[in-house]
Every structure is written in structure tokens, then in C-alpha cells.
View 1 (cartoon, rainbow, N blue to C red):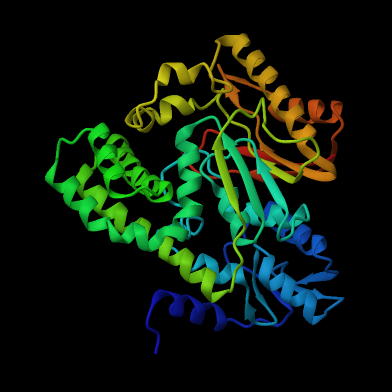
View 2 (cartoon, rainbow, N blue to C red):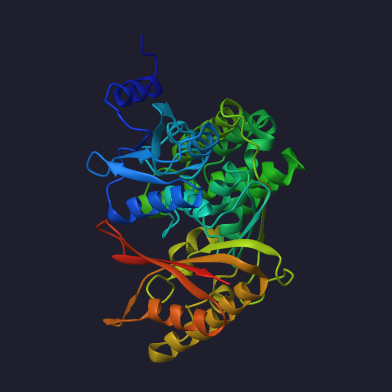
Length: 415
């Protein structure tokens, strides 16, 4: 008897005939995803042939060790010898309606998020293993942090926005303090429901009285910020949104704890700080890999987009505009300033990356004042001028009515 949605999902999948060694997940639909799936297999040492309309694969150098590696690590495969992959089990732990927002990925509506499936594949493609360190100079909403953590890869990330730093920390650190989070949940809800006009300052002061653990306090900071965003962007009632979000967030952290135990995962260490990609506080040749997507600030004003949350945290939004890459200037000067800032960031990436290791840059050509800005070409030219060699350039189409970018390129460079 099927008791829950996970059982139903598994039953539907395994009722289908699978005749080969490997089968793709049903949500793999685009050419770039197939390219990444094949690159994953090659990086893991597999020789293969594709069959059944490119949806199944036959291994030509089959071994139990290789099959286990593919089952444990890959992002685009559903089954290995009809046994579900770790990733297939992971994505079933989802409190949302979006297939890409499983576990804690969904927390906070940050614009321009990575596809976590793509990030997991890229971590494999650039050869990162348990205990290696991947760095992200624009850590954003923490997608790479969580995917690295799940694979046992250590993550070091910085972002100039304190809001982004909190997002990444909460998504990856709350699993370690889940009991402490739950312990004060009722008190926090009671405080919010009893104080309909409560200020941000008073709320954050109250959280300080309940716990001295930074991870717990960050969880409840982000709970408020998610609800502030719901109120600002969707005109939702703050108190009802807060209660809904606190329950969903705790359920998602529980999902992460449960999948860790079920799959016997050794989680990677995560370190996220507020920092500047133009001046990275890491030693030369110290990082095993880099995955990032530079800010599309020319086309998307990140400060304005999250102004409500930044102000709620007590941050000076005007001052922040002077620090963010791509926000300063107007007209041609805005593009020139952006390019100069990105040159500094790319040079820092080269400096800290170990020789022969890979840096992945996911970027597209933005449109500014009705003109296309050749950001992809600029990135390739500059990266190669400082010593990187372009290893792969994969076109990625972006679907969605409200996306400001319609196409990105996955640029894989080698130092």
C-alpha cells in the first residue's frame, strides 16, 4: 500500500520499463542537460553508449565500483541497474511545487538562482571529491554551498550582501541545530502573533534573548525576512506568512537531516562570510575548484530587488549601492565600471585556484538601454588573457516569462 507522495513517485517511475544500465531523470529535457550528464559520466571514468532516444545509457566498462560512484554522485540519472540514485532520493524531499527547490533550496525568493541539479553535475565534471574545497566569490542564495555539502565537498563562499550570507548559512547550518530551533519555535510564534506592529529591531532583540547560538538566530532572522518578502512582493499577511514559513522551513531542515541519515552522507564543511570578490582573503593556489555566476547587476538591480529585507536588517541601502558590482554609474560608464570590477574578481579567482584546476563561470549577455552587452565574449577574452584556458562552452537556454536573461553560457576554464 502506498502511504505517501514519495512512495507514489517511486512507484510511478519504477513501473516504467528500464532496459539499460543507466536511465535519465524524467525532468531532463534540454540539450545542455544531456551534455552535462555525459560530461558527468566521462569525469567519473565511464565509457558508454546512449540508447532509447538518448534517455538510457549502456556502460562499456561496467564495474561495481563505477556503478556505485555513478549512483552516489551524479545529478541527471534516475537509476543505475534499476536501483535509484542518491540524487533521485534527494529530490523527493521537497516541501514545494518546484522540482528544483528541494530540501532547503527554496528558502527565500532570491532572483537569479542556480539550478541545483546543474551545480551538482558541475561539481562532478570539474573533478571535485570529498574533502576538496570549492569556492564561490558570489555565493548568492547558497545553491552551490548546499550541493557541495551534500557531496561531502567543503565550501568556502563570500558575498558582498549580508542577506546572501545569511541565506547560505541557514540552508546549510540549520541541520546541526534543528533541536534548538524547534525548542524555541512556539515562543517565537507567540511573540509574533501577539505583536502585530512589532518593529524589526524589537523582533531581533527578542531572538537574542532566546538563544546565544548564531545558527539558531540566523534561522529566525531568515524566517522573518522570507515573510517580509511575502508581504512586500505578494501583499501577504505577515503573521500568517510567518507561521506558514516557519513550519515549512523546519520541515525542510528535517528533510535534510533525514536524507543525510538515509543515504549515510558525510556532509561537507560550509564557510560563508560577507566579503568582496575583488579582494578575496585566501592564499594563492589554495582552492580545488570555483563555480560562480557573476552578478547581472547591469540588468538587475540586486539592491533595489531586496531593499525591503536589507532595510529590515538595519543596513544602509544607499551605502551598499556604492559597494555592489554593476550598480554604480550610468550609460557607458556603468558598463565600464562593471567590466573593471569583474576583471579584479576574475584575477582573484585565478590567483587562489590551484594549477590545472577548473573555474566555472555561468554568465549571459545582458541587455542594457536596449543594447546587448557582450559579457560572455568579454569574460572569455579576459580570462584567457590572465592565463585560463577555455575547456568547455555550453549554451544554456533559460525558460520563464519573467527571466531577464534568455540564454546563458556555462564556461569551464582550466588554470
